[in-house]
Length: 421
Image 1 (cartoon, rainbow, N blue to C red):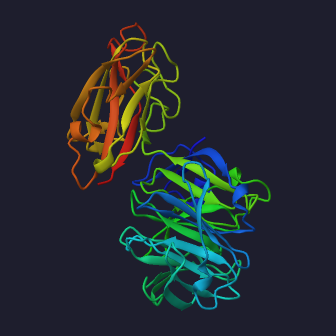
Image 2: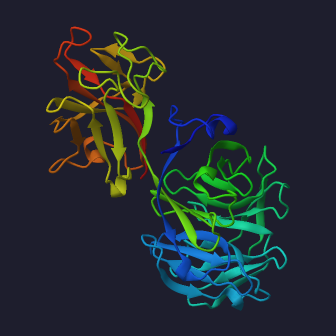
Image 3: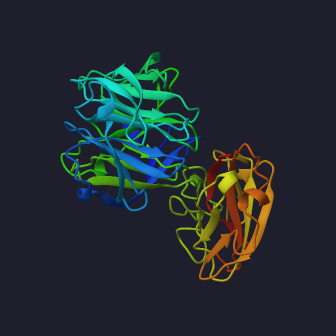
């Protein structure tokens, strides 16, 4: 099952999956959760990811609670930091962030409401800065520009304010109320792939994208179906260093579980289900696939796997449900004719603009991949700018059987990919 964030109203977005993609739609697929019982937390205060050393951090929100460094691949405990060196700090951390600015990656913590202290400590446990007041922080994170943000809202049902703080002193530099909700947000995280800000509602389990300048809600999805009853969340959220994985702490069993989700970068952009336009001879396919063919009533599907980052490109395209050993031509475009695709052959072509023919492959067992062994990286073949770009991908395939039109070819569905630098 995939969870999609799109630009529809939040209530509808929570109920409908697989819809046409928004510009930076977030697609999450659940992975096996981490069992962190061995860490021995009394309660989960927050999560944070350390980009420089690729570490996952979690804090214990109980009295005299500690901050723990975990292996982001296994959840195993690596080290522990005690923030008690911050004056007045002894109730445990409710908000946690790891500084990207210092070579040592200082630990920034904010204590529980009743104490409301905050500050920075080194990973060796030494005091770096005393913030004094904790700003009523329920969550904390650094954005992609190195700015420190917290979610602030002490009363359930009283709404939440985003606050941008001076990372050296903790002084409030800007306050932005989150509009259109009375939910208290327990944490925030910035997507390193797009720079977008996401907050998590404590009472509903909604993951909401928020504009940090206006406080407007942009998109949202309901994570509660992945939470054990009573579906409440007491913990935090974090992306990994590339935005390829997403973590949610304190789900169900607050002290023992971290949920994990895989980020899928290839987003459905057009299909042959009839939502966008009719297939050439009524050969409607399944949602997410192209128009039906002689070998598949569902049609052929295009998916993108891996990381679309120019500096660390592991992305590859897979066309499936094509004839067993047919020819498959993968191509890339700069624009998308999603609302008015062109009926061509037995299918629909949606990708347009500046077209690059990436390469032709021979399918094996009805599946073909590009790039494959010996091929240039996809960003190289597709001439993706170093600054990144949004591109669209589709594949043409030969289907010579007498089936639909006199033509002997069809198309897969298309996917949208946003490339980061």
